[in-house]
Every structure is written in C-alpha cells, then in structure tokens.
Length: 288
Image (cartoon, rainbow, N blue to C red; front, side, top):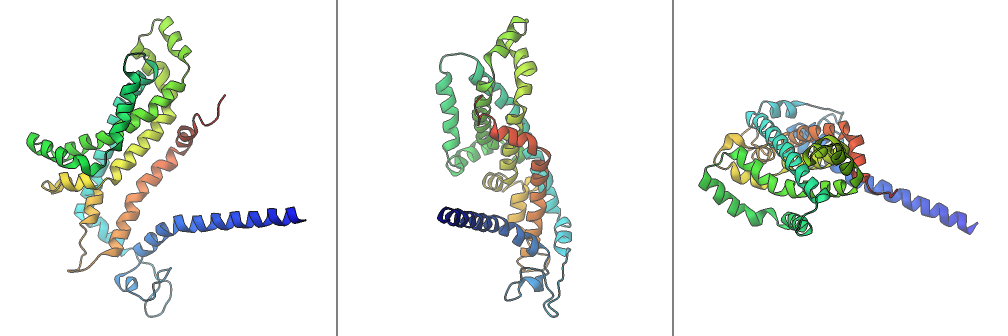
C-alpha cells in the first residue's frame, strides 16, 4: 500500500514538473503571438490581458493590422530576402566544405589528424565579440560587400561545428565500405560522394539546419557589417531598428508580428526535415 502511494505521488510530481516546464517553454511564444494580435490601445491596457480584448467592451477582439504594417515595411521585406540569401549560402558552403573536411578527418589516415580536429574544435570556443574588430578591419581594408562579409564571417563558426559533427558520423561508417569501393576501382573522391556521402544525409540535415538557424538569427556581425550598407541588413537588424508608423511610437505589436513571421520559416524547415533531424540527433545513441 505504501509503495503504491509513493509511486502515485512520484507520478503526480513528475507530471506537475512536466506541466510547469511546458508552460515555462511555451508561454513566451504564446505571449508573442497574442501581442502581435493586439492594437496599440490593447497593448497599454492594465492589467494586461492574456487574450486580445476590446478596451471598452472587454470582448475578444483580434486584429491583423500589425502584420499588415510589417509587410508594408520595405526594410523588413528586404531584410527577409537578405537573411534568406545569406543563410542559404552559409548552409550550402558549410555542408560542401564541411563534408570534405569531415571525410578527410574521419576516414583518411595522415599525420596530425587528431591535432587538426581539436584545432578546428577550438575555433568554436572564441566569442564573436573577440574577433569582430579584426574581421571588420580586414573587411573594410579589402572593401568586401556586406552580404559577402556576413557569409564569410558566419562560416568561421558554422564550418568548424559542421566538420566536428560530421566527422563523428564518417567515423561510425564501416571502413569496409571504403575498402570495397577502392577494390572496385573507385578513387577516394568517388568513394566519398558515391558511397559514403549518401549515408550521412541525417548528419547533413542536422548540421545544415543548425547552421541555417545560426545564420538566420545572427545579429552582432550583421549589425556591424551593414552599418554602412543599410540595403544589406538582415531581418534581425531590421527588427531591432523598427520604427512605428506613428511618430515616437514604440511598435511592440509590429515587433512581435515580425518575430512570428521570422520564426515561421524555421518551423517549416524543422517540420519538413523532422524525420532526418531525429535520425541525425539520435545516430550512435545505441550500439549495435
């Protein structure tokens, strides 16, 4: 009887923790969506309402005017296009060069391989702010365009991560596959892209998606490198520099609407590649 009570109490505590964690994680997203559906008058209501309500009648009142204002903002629309170009370019380049590096470090034998791997890993330990000044000076000296400078600078952090993660996947692939391809007359490059690379699709999806998200959300480098060329501003910078349609207005509703819009592409990508993403995250978790 005591064991049953203690077991029941443990289950209750467990599910209470689950509910608390769920509310803690989901509430910011809920509040963002609710705020984006409120008018200026609804936003200044006290106390704040968890559902958009009319300030006078207190009835539920939802508006999409913030979304309309966001899409009428040319800077924001241009920022989405710039973010898409930069993020897609970073992802493709990181996967292309990262897969080559991971194959070499995971399957080829050469002196200094372990040292090279840990050297690549150490590159991800430096905070962005520590290399920002030097990078900006080099970019200004070489007169590199803002979009290109962002792509190159983002690669400094996404490429080492991609190589490190994909190296572990290449190491787990049987050496017999590479040996069999060599016996059949394939070169190392042919064995790489015809035999081994297709088997690392889950790893490529996982690292590619993480690289895309990192480039899509990056703010510090984007703010610095586009300080002169404003037309190349990405969407995080465009949102940070939002100004309301009314003078001296703090556009909280528009900022929240923009946040929802910016988050949707990431949710769509995760939904499309969710199976591959799970395979990549759980690969190697169980032996045998």
